[in-house]
Length: 255
Image 1 (cartoon, rainbow, N blue to C red):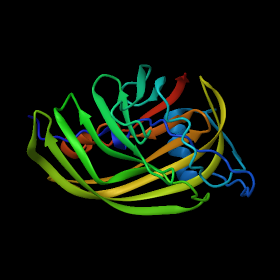
Image 2 (tube, rainbow, N blue to C red):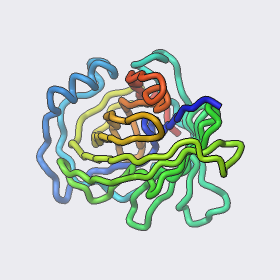
Image 3 (cartoon, rainbow, N blue to C red):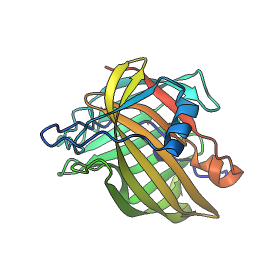
Image 4 (cartoon, rainbow, N blue to C red):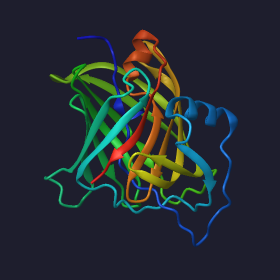
């Protein structure tokens, strides 16, 4: 097996909903120069528009529903390709807590919805690399109640096992994650124009032999989930090959 770690959780485009609670709206905030430059470089001009007034992140999870979404890759090595994302509720769980999120044919994430409306990645399978990655606690994706400009910090233990032998621990380490709700922005993608909440993930740590340090962005809209993202799909590329390139995707079609 290759000594690599491949984690779609650092990059993949997720399907969770963030809604604006306009009962207590907060003023629109302009995107900083560095953030806007990086996002525009990969997503392209015209995708991210003006800032919009939004409220705290909502615990409503109506976008965590079964169906297939299609994303177009607009920046990075696979520019021009499309990528399906298939979301299904695990049949063994009738409570709606456990979900399966398949990205293409090579990566599968397993999600858990908390009673407070939060969503976390618990584990993922990288079919290509033949590993399963487990997170403890789960890597937080949605933080309900967080206000624009607010942050949440967490420390996540990461363990990587051989997919064919779950007892064979290949790598382990820890990630320090800073989750920031930057604000709301008008976003135009092939699937339409949305008022979207921009979440920024900054993470640092060490897994196996290499250090991890990167940033990713996701725009989340009511009823659609992730409508645009700039992130790293393959952590293994960064860890093993020192490839720090990013991938940008926009929502092309949703159920």
